[in-house]
Image (cartoon, rainbow, N blue to C red; front, top):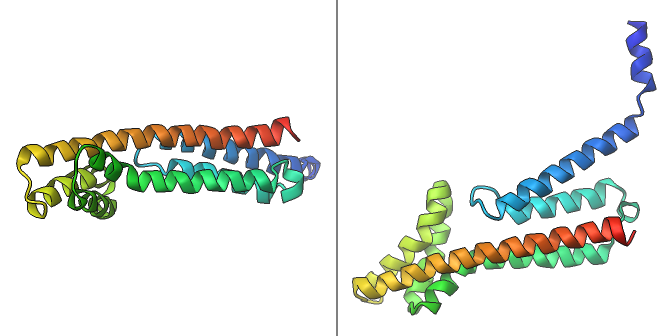
Length: 180
């Protein structure tokens, strides 16, 4: 028993905690990056959380991450959320949707949140189609065109979110490892 106590006393707990923190930060960034593609994982939110964790857990000024970079990363994060919410509606408008179709995309996305992954994927699409048919009094062909726009907008939004995630990660890595 005395031998175990000696081992425990000889461990550098500060370094151990640092390694664990780095492991968590890297894991959050990697999972977050994949989450920008997979709808179940809040990608840029995990990346942003990892960077905030780094800043505050490694004593702000001593972390190597400047507050200016943290502001840039925050603005990128906010823009990813805005793109996430509006990309389907913008795609629907691009493909000739009425204001009713755009409202349907936004409301469908909101209701889709309550039904998990299927709801997140189907909600905006169904919202555009139903609102175009019921409120805008469009025929099936025209409503379908708006619905295709929602899908195209969603895909474009995903591509843009991936680019934003890469920009967030690049800003973080260059500030922590190159400039400091």
